[in-house]
Length: 160
Image (cartoon, rainbow, N blue to C red; front, side, top):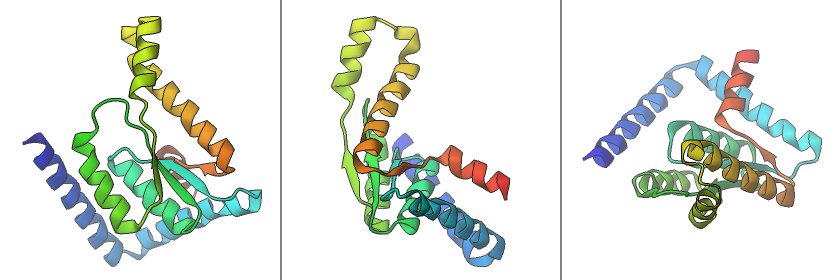
């Protein structure tokens, strides 16, 4: 039931965003501004952009913007550590609808090994973030892409 409600909730949000975007020139200007900001990556001689796709609204928005800014040189990383089955449908719909290039890196075993090795049960959230960061930075370095995330795009909007 939770999964159905979540999917329905995201569908409603996306439909409302689409209606607002169609009817509001200011939001179109914001979207264009962010896409231009992301595209400035070309001036730094980076080959494209890389971003994480988690199934959340923030990562969906960044995925859309990254794809718009770099239609042919973008990569969405899907990095499950725990069960992502509830998010997988949302991710698959997003990837299919906007034709986003993806790579899935299953980090479950890495997480379990580190968790058992260090027995830091109260620090699990931090461990998850650090493991994902390590893989993001490594992919970023290998591909010579720029990493973008929801927080960065929000900061750009605040600057405008």
